[in-house]
Length: 345
Image (tube, rainbow, N blue to C red; front, side, top):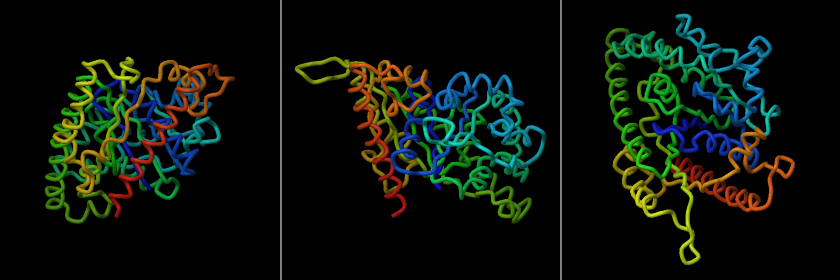
């Protein structure tokens, strides 16, 4: 099973759109069993996959939806002081949405547990086994789901806090969707410094825990070295509106300079988190074109972009944009798959 966190410290870069549409492509076009886990308290992935009306009903009338597991349900035992998560996981099944993926819905209450996860992290840093167990809640989740899925995509919010740290602790890989703006580059630098810091704390805490309670981490299947340390799979860049020069579509000069700076920034900030078999060129997964009205159309129809139809309101030039997006998603999924195959050789 492949677990991928979709993450950037900069919001507004099309992360959720890419996450859900890429997950749908792996499910519907490549025949994979795919789960999306919405780990953003804003619940954008849940709203995109299931529709705004379903999401509103899910959070307003929770008793009606007890048969579906949300991220809040999974973490409730930890909120209550336990070291284990809910083990009866019942995602919203793929037949209930147009994306063809199973979904663990997000929940606005996820932000409330941030303090509890931060407290657990401090316990972990001191070498406390309970702190390791709570901070590794996503490790527990992935172990529970290992035989059920080929891919799990985690949609994360843009913060550098305890929620996202705990999600990454349990993931094998991460991917950074970026925008062609200076703040995306700054976000990459922030991610690099943040990862360096807490990965170092984790490794030192493992040594402390082994001295305090030998063998306990192994007993609870707590990883002593986190896969995410060498799990960077690459990045995408969301393009801004282009202009035509001599028949060739180009980004405006300011954005073009930023786009050209991205590979060098990835080289210096994030390549150290990639497998040694991946070079900076292979880490560029693709450029995401400006999708104009396709994104709001997909949101209103609760549909992946590639499944939009005339009955959803698709008209005229949008058909060409849709086919361009199909080419783009094919390229990103191929590059992503190639990187995974390269790592495993």
